[in-house]
Image (tube, rainbow, N blue to C red):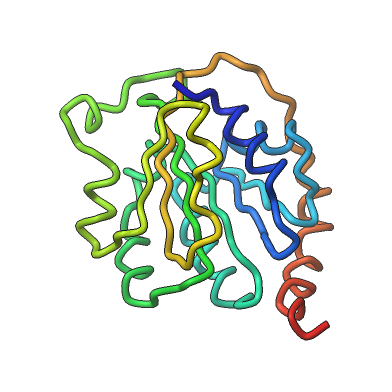
Length: 192
């Protein structure tokens, strides 16, 4: 199994100049910040469970020259899968969703996700919406296969262990003050 911090650190080490990142709430945001993602290219969500995917779609539409990478948890994905219908109708090609599948609601105490216990498979939900660019990774050695270069919409389901790591808090004022100007910079990247 893969650890959350290994997934996030891989994304950090292999990031490209034209990428913007959106991190889901809780440990996912904290792990991204702890990995060193600068706040001018990464937006760390707070209090918006299930909404990073929709936020990322908006970023992708507003910034067609940037590649948007959304990282969120399995519980948040299952809580708000309606973004898939919107994404299917828009066929945004600069969008990649990385779903961290640890099987629990980590931020609220580690409760099991009952839908996953009952056999619901995230990749089948994605496929049912007409998407075919889907990867499932369960071993750390598979991380280099993460399909971030192909046209989107792309999805990667990363099966991780339920980590007990403690991460530092994300400084929200810093995120607010530095990410917004980056959106405008990314939208002009190919014009430079």
